[in-house]
Structure formats: structure tokens, C-alpha cells
Amino acid sequence: MNTQKLTSHSFHPAKAAANRPAASLLAQAMQTLRRWSQLARQRRQLASLSDEMLKDIGRSRADIEQEAGRPFWDDPDRR
Image (tube, rainbow, N blue to C red; front, side):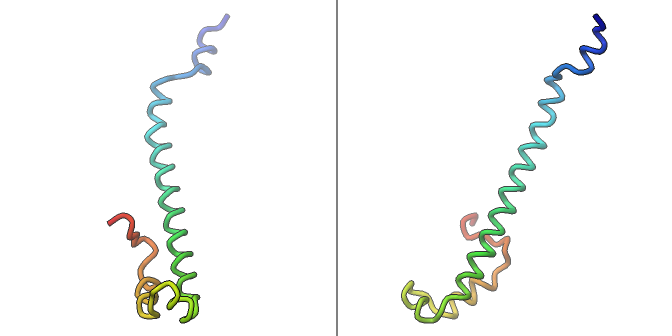
């Protein structure tokens, strides 16, 4: 049996451990991108509401214009 061939295709814990931080970083980046997309969508939806609908939820057009004008990365939940 050729042991060199076996070790070249076997599991390497050190390499797997080195990939974990990269995978975690990628997962975190994907989560951030999803959150930014969600914020942008919600702000567009708010901006499209009629004045009557805004009155029903207790907001003014000025409130919504201010919120809709914020950049997508400005997350109020992360303050």
C-alpha cells in the first residue's frame, strides 16, 4: 500500500481548522449583505406607503423621507 498517496488525500485537521475562520467570515459577510438588502427593501416599502397608511401607523411623510434617505448600511438595530 502506498502511504504517500493515502496521506495526500487524507483529512488534515490543521487545514480544516485554518478554513473555519474564513468560512465564518464568509457566513458573517453573507448575513450582513442579507441584512442590508432587507433594510433597503423595507425603506423602499415605507416610502411607497400612502399618507393615509402612514397616519395609521403613526408616522409622517417627513419621518419616512428621513428613514428612506438613510444609507442601506445604516442599521438602527446595531446602534
